[in-house]
Image 1 (tube, rainbow, N blue to C red):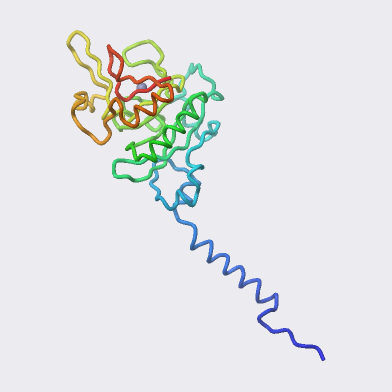
Image 2 (image 1 turned 120 degrees about the vertical axis):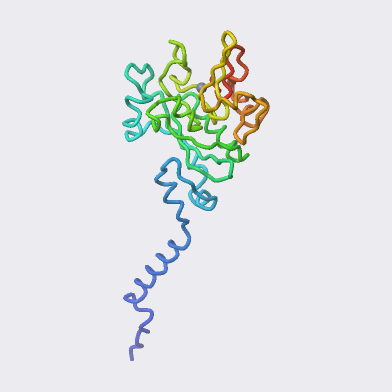
Length: 247
Ligand SMILES: [Zn+2]
């Protein structure tokens, strides 16, 4: 006599059941922010759990300039006559925290020779909760350095001249970074006249004036950049460019 097969073990029943269980499991376990990290819309806020699920190592990476990014750069930071090749530049994905401790998706374009330095520096600053308010490409401000600085935007590459000069800036090669520029302005004194860039940061030209984003000699940011061989604009004699590190 043939023993009847129990209905529950029939393949017709087990397959859909397995699919339902797998779907439910994956929906419960993946934080919503992981999708935001995959898409990497710079400026988006994410939580710790999403960063852990996505993998912190995937949040500090350098890549060739993607086509979609390069299209935004042409005519803005990548101006006509730009003497640096696209292939010498890198697009960085970086995380940073603001003064409230929120985790924000950042982005930066730099020269390939400093990409690894910048990844190591910004990863350490993220761990040490060093506050950086904003980290977008200067192209978001149409490559206008004054607007980018006034927005307190931390950035690197911009093919432009030094303000008030015909000399190309180290930003033109992607070899200089400006950190929290509104609160760390560039201060020039000539014939007793003091000019401050950005103008909105004039009150922070007085370096005794405190702010969460003030950069000082010997702080975490200054120590990390100088340890990686960058020079600080706050050490220059004729111009004090407190936001600026270059290599
Ligand atoms: Zn600068």
